[in-house]
Image 1 (tube, one colour):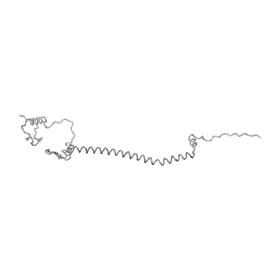
Image 2 (cartoon, helix red, strand yellow):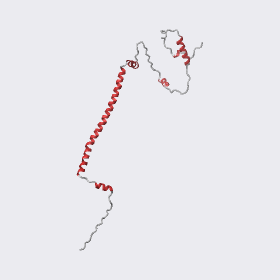
Image 3 (spheres, one colour):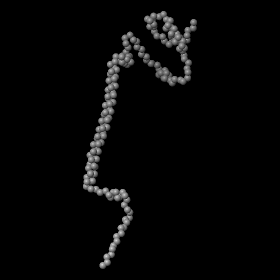
Image 4 (tube, helix red, strand yellow):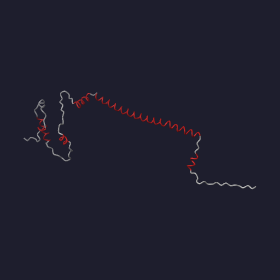
Length: 176
């Protein structure tokens, strides 16, 4: 009997698998790897909320530390203010400015601006850039004031006369 040899020839499939398909096929899951992936997933599920709380608490702590620092600054400024109020000269100046008190023998003048609104608005007009002439002769007024003060025979008690108003001051020097 003659034996015939059969030859087998490999037949090519329609398409060769790509490298990514070979990579996916190469993954083999054993019981140990499935157990480890389960433990990692369980750790993520358990630790994620805890880490979120940790981060939130750290943020709250830093906010509270910032507010404590701000309050310490306010306390130090209040202590400095209290130290100023312990100084008699500061208290005296505040009483003069806020309550309009004066020392015995002093005279207080309170100027009230009771002009009409149109007069106040005219005063706030913009300053012009051109040179303007003065309405009074300031040099003559200065000279007359100096001469009057230097040549007067009045005693100090006589100088307590009513104040000089602008209308009583001559605008031109007196001619002799």
